[in-house]
Length: 260
Image (tube, rainbow, N blue to C red; front, side, top):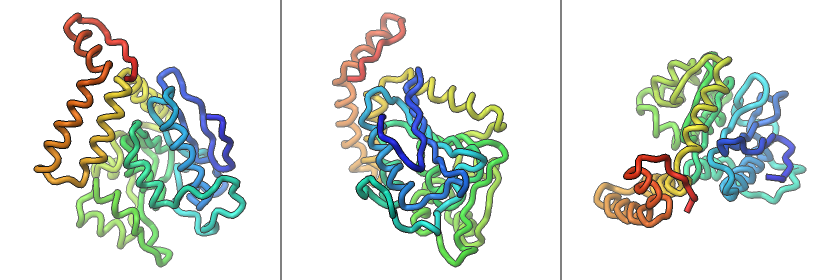
């Protein structure tokens, strides 16, 4: 993970294989401009390609997670990295990721920031964080966010959020399923560490195949999903890790994963 970024800080994987990507523009509350989105796509692709990375933590520098879209930077001017994709591509990349992505919501997550939270596999929020869709207040509408927010929020409640520009506290977001856990800010790192440690103990190939199957079967109806997932189970059973896991179960010992 040697690539350098202007608006991200990428911390090498720890002993559990967790790599941290920090949105690092605290002066603008880590707002998502075109350049930051592009850098995030590169950082995520690098992490996916690195076998040492078992999970990916996304968080924000300073007091905010992400304030939403940076309306002052609608183009990736000055970005030395070739264009990889826009915000829609970023949400799709997170949803289709074959490694667990954890949103460490250290502060406010508004607009596009809430989109990152909703698209991630896990989200742990500090109890003083606020999450919302304030776009309507500046004459815009959270169009792309609907696709990911609908996965968690009932339609009537989502309509009120978007049309009224509502801001939720962390406990309200927990009740809607937008985050999976709320802890005091002082315990955020502990909670994220517990999760990355647990993920790091699982078979990396089983995690990869499982997440790929979840993404690929998302839009399938039941009749198509069942035979597809049956075949994916067969692919999983054919791995070395599955053989090791079953042998370890019979022998009452801890498995030693090979990741293949």
